[in-house]
Length: 290
Image 1: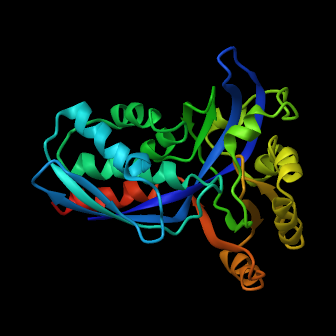
Image 2: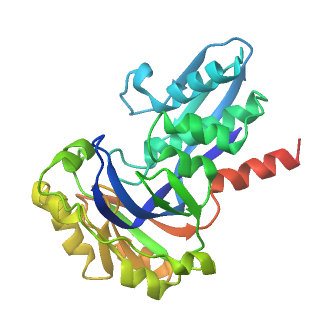
């Protein structure tokens, strides 16, 4: 069984304040994309779980896919195992959810493969133990997020196309959120549009921005350089705490044409926004044929 693990973008990110427990109160819009990693699952009749990925040098106990499998086994008492192969298309440390999405796809895929029968809500609760962004990928909808990112409301956005650019650096999320220079007093957005069911491009343009961007560009000049290059062609901003930046384009073709001019020192990809996760769409197809 093969399942995609899609990337995400933060179309905006506002930090409203810091809580007493050290976590940050924020507002963001998670946009799921039609591009990402791919996980291939093979069921085993014994409890062992193995993970294979060329070029990814992470100890097994630290691998989010392996930890997701262990969590599901512990939560359900499942005595089955699996071998999981990861095709890594998304850069690490890019702010596009690669590891979180892989973990979510592991939970969704193994829940199906092992016939565990957990609901999306139960899987999302498990996923929260692995990372704050895992639940949005488990639930599988482009979503408005509040709190520390765990309060999710499905949102509908107009289809837009993106060129995502990865500078040659990895940003430390912990370093950004602990830095005293980080903006922590942005006003909250009152989201009447969400109740109306549609966030159009004009609304998104008006509220775009990322409170982490100025600090990230100060600490990582490579991010500023990438943003300035892409800004020749489109409106550009940082996603998450970085390091990836993205430009918004009217068509996939126009994004692809700019991608063809990308300097060799950077990597990237072209993708379109989707409302429903490709993981959920693929699982629905698999379920309909079994």
